Image (cartoon, rainbow over all chains, first blue to last red; front, side, top):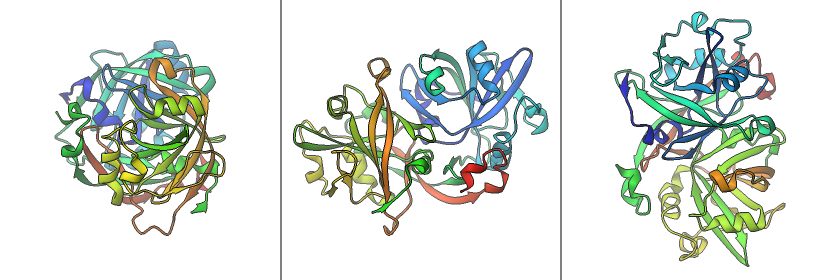
Length: 183
Length: 183
């Protein structure tokens, strides 16, 4: 894992990949899958995400106010879907899905070694958590795994099908108003 | 444009495509580009998005509490980036970019004929608008353009480069906990 500037985590989140979320609570790590998330602000980097009382991770997130957002590559697609279709209430998911925990530097929730990127987050704002299950997180650390062969992420289409990243187009020269994004 | 069930707009938003946002205020339509948005809730469909005071559309959105989220295909990529790099303060963007307005059924903001999908929205909650420029919208109507040849969307990578949709993988049969998504 190579350190990655938190001021640039938009590059990991904004394209809308399916994410894993890890928490650590009462001596136990858990992991879940989400697709409802967005960047809220570039720097300091705030990220919005929906995690509800129907998710086993909800209580851990509210109690510890920490989590890690991990970006899986498409090689993990089946695992990621299966992780989203069982509950930490019944399964030790790290063990069941043979995922490797790496200790975080900023938070107690673990990084996921098999993922392309890991973003360590602290809960910044819960004012819409009761009403919409909406948490505002602040990214406080990030690392990437550039040596992983499969770098393509995947995106939930809301129906159990997923779009895999295709080609990249470069329109940096047209970003005349947002030059800071070109660094 | 063919009508599309609002209860399924997650299928348009969740994959994280770059979006256009139209507003109509003081007799004039405007259009902008966003990449900071997410689904908040499936049904009734709530969508979160970041539109700030630095955006010309911000005042229109606050005053009229209505907008349309339009999903452009990758054939519009250059236009969409250019729309995001000028201001409605200075340019009549619909005219400058030769985009065609279609009247909405639920809101006064126009649909964009050249887009793959249009979601008519009303502002549901502005409680985090001052602090984070975060608006919660409710989708009140949706339509799609299935006859458009180019159906691939594109995703901002946060640096002026964009990922185009690649292949689709079908993992519906693994969605054992979320059977409703399979309809």
